[in-house]
Each structure stands twice: as structure tokens, then as C-alpha cells.
Length: 440
Image (cartoon, rainbow, N blue to C red; front, side, top):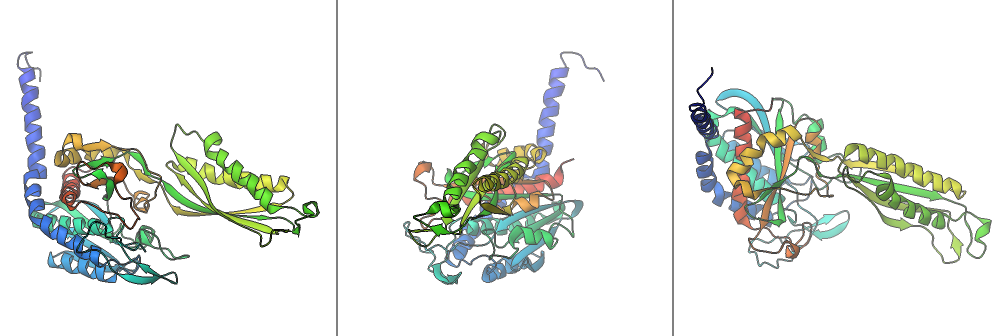
């Protein structure tokens, strides 16, 4: 239909207003806001209880019991014992539609809390970890993640009859890692079929940040967090007297050349304009006396990458560099690479699709593009199977200098609880909006 020039602008304006009104009514932001306000005190109380009673990865027994009890009280279908201690809740909406998943990690760390902030709910828990007596602390904010997702479950259960599809709540154990030789965390959940029955179409998750101001959400399409791989290089030479090193093959000198050469893999062999990467040798062990050239040296380290092809290239260059230098020195080098965690890769189309939802709940100026980070997150295993979006949520008090904020995984770690409500609103809005308007 053709419209006169003077009428066309009015028609466009009307269409924009009508569309905006439709989107608002479809996602019911006012209802979400009201429900988030109502559940906020519970979320804070849950977080404090979890913080005071932390449990290490694959031992989150009491944490799982609290989660399951809450989800059952809401009328959700609940599965326990997933990937050892994980909990999954399924909320079926009143109308047919897609399936969306929301994930929170449950485990604490072997850290003694300093309680520099004089929290009445600070952790005093002690346990044995790898043969040592350690403290236990939620020093990375997983207590907040669990509390927020419990809050989202309560909010969405109230809206159940209006939901156009199904929401799967995934409470994951052992994000910080499992015991040596064990498969755990997100990887095991995927292997056990957490993304099936019903099959999940998209997954959302977030991580609170102690150095991002409350009220802020940060995101990044593509590589958000790095892959994490461990490596071990065993250099074998020929033992000799330290006074006559020419009688043997020195694996220490050979290892020194290897360490130096490894630093050129990222700086001289990778296209760093594509994505960042890090290769670090963390320990070298070899020899027992000052006057003996040892028979072998072992070195261990980590590889971080924000791009999968770069990750694989680094693996190959590391093997080639170490073995070639060893051969040239008359020694041998055996290289073992243990792939720990993939790249946390935010689906580009899904990120763009859901950005308006985030901007609506937080305000456009408070949703910010962030730099990638070279720490890892096993949420990546979910993203390998289905489109996923992972976000950072501000937990730093307003006005604080980020440089002074206590780091994650430290005894002084602290988050401002006033930021938790935004996390509830963001996850709830992502779920509702995706069910109303799934990615095509």
C-alpha cells in the first residue's frame, strides 16, 4: 500500500509505538520488576545462608538439598544427583513454545575468609582438601549465582500460565574443577543429557564481578572468556658430573631454551589482532645436587586462548617447538596437553537478539561492551552444544575504584548485595523474552 508523503511519517511513528507497546506487554517488564522487588529479600537471605555454609565442588550436598526443596515448593519438576550433586528444575509454561535454560554454579573454594568487611554471615567452615586442612569460602560469588537463580525460579513460577514454553533451571556443581582424573561440572552434566528431555534451544548465565559497579551488566559477543589447557613437557637428557657436562646431555639448559622459545609462540607466531592468547610456564623441576647434571627435567604450564583455531595452533606449535629444540640439543622432549575448558563463546546472533532485553532491565547506558578475560569458565561446554550467552553482573559498591576491589578467589572477596536484584531481573527477562521471540 502506498501512502501520501504527509501521512507516511505518521504511520511509521504509530507503527513504532505499537511495536514498542506490543513488546512491553509481551515481556511484561512491570510485572517482572514487581516480582523481582518482592523476591529480593529472600535472595539476599539465601545468599547469606549459602555464604555461611559453603561446600567444595562435588560435595555441595546441603546446598543441593536447599535448592531442590525450594524448587519443589514452587511446583517444579526436580531432578537431583545430576553430575553427582547437581540439581535441575523444569518449569513448563501454560502455553507451548521453545525451551530455554538458565544456569548457576554452586561450589565454593578452599579459601579461608578474612572477613575484613565484618560480615555476620562470614564462613568459618573448615574441611580437608587434597590431604590438607583448609577453609571453605564462596570467594567467587557462586553463592550469589545460586540465590539469584532461586529467585528467578520463584518469579517465573508466578508467571507460569503466561510462559510460552519451558524454562530449565540448571544448578551446576564443580565449576572450579573436579578431583584429578575425574570428569565433573558442566562437562559431566552435558554428558548426562542435561540439555535434553526436553531439548534446550538456548542457554543463559551470568557471573557476578567484584570489580564492576552494581547496576551494570557487561557482555561481549564471540570469545568472552578464554579456553584453559594444561601442558607438561618432559625433557630427557643424559646424566653427567656437573664438572664434566660434555660427558652427558644437559636437560636443564635444553629446558631453558625451550622456555624462552615458547614465549615466541604467541608474540611472534599468532595473529594477535584476531584474539588474545597466553602461554605460561608455571613450574620447572629437575636435579637434586649442585654438581650433577640430571637425567630429566619436567615443566608444567597453562595455555589460554580466546579463539578456537588459535588454541589448536598453539598446541601444535608448542609440541613442535619443544621437540625440535630438544632434538637439536641431543635430548628428547615429550609433550602432554590436557584440554581443560573450551572458549566461553557467546553466540553472535543470540547476543544481538537479547541485547534489547538487557538494556530494558538495566538501562541502555548500564549495559556495556567489555574486554575479554583470560580466566576460564566451564559454562563453555553448554555453548559447544547450543547457542548461549554469558554475562558479567556488577557487584562492586557504587563509587569504588575497581583497582581497590578485592579480587575473586581471594580471602577478602566481597560483593555488594544490592546488585543481586538486577541479576534476577536480567535472567528472568532473558528467559521470558526468548520464549516470546526465539532466535530464528
